[in-house]
Length: 318
Image (cartoon, rainbow, N blue to C red; front, side, top):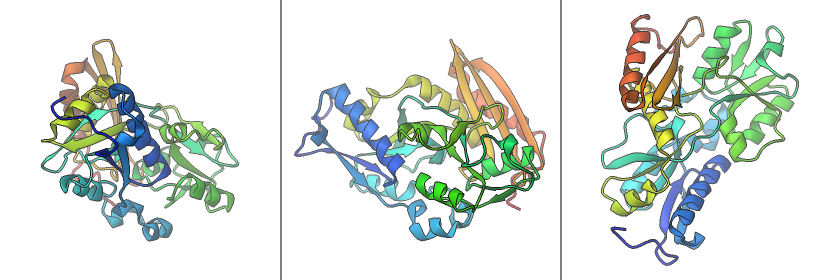
C-alpha cells in the first residue's frame, strides 16, 4: 500500500445515496474491501448523501425525470462531496452514471455484475403479453416506455416512481396494472416476495450498464486506487467499456431511450444495441462482434451504424 490502511480511528468514508438498494450496494463494497484487506467493519464508514434525484417532493409528484434535469441527477452531490474530501470513494448504480466524470474523479472499479434483465411486476398479470388492450402501465424510464409502446402501442403508459414498496402500493391501489423494476435490485435486496417475472433481453433489452455497481474515487488518491483495484471485476469492466462507449457515441443519458448489452465468450465480445423514438414508433437494433480489447471501438461503430439509419430528430423529447 502507498498509504496506511484505514482504521476505526481513521475510516475510509464510502459515499452513497440513502435508498435501500444504494445502501445494500455500499455494504457489498464494504464487505469486499474488508475481505480483500482483512480489515474490521469499523475501518469503513458509510456516509449517506442526499441527491436531487432523492427529493421526496419530486418523487411524489411523479414528474418526468427529464423535467428535473437528467444528467447527474443521482450523482452530482455525491461527487461534490468526494471532491471536497468529505468522502473517499462513492458507490453508484452504473446505469445512473454519465459517460464522463468530473475533472479530478475516476470511475475504474466495478463489482461483479448482477442479472441485467428487467422485471415485469404486477399483482394481476404475469407478462406484458397478458396485459389487456388499453391497460395502464407505470414507469419513470423513457427506455422502458419506448420499448413497451413499440411492442404494445395499445397500452397507456403513466409516470411512476418511488421505491419498491411505493410502487407495489400504487399497483394495489389500481394506479396502474403493471410496472418494471431491475432484477438486479430485487436480487440484491432479497425481495423474492415481489410479484416479478424476469423479461428476456430478446423481448426488452436492458439499459446500458444495468445490474452493475461502479466505485468512483479521486484521481490523485493512490490508496483508494490500490484498494479498489483489489475488488475490481475485469469482465464487468470490459462489458461496460463497450456499452458506455456505445452510449457516449449516441450522447445518451439515463433519460434517453437507448439499450445495450455486451456479453463475453472467450476472447470475443458481442454487443447488442437498440435505439428508439421516445413515442415507441420506431426502433433500430443491431449487434457487433469482435475482440474484447476493441470493446469501446465496437461500441462506437455500433452506434454509428444505428445513427446512419435515422434522422437528426430521432431522440427529440416530444
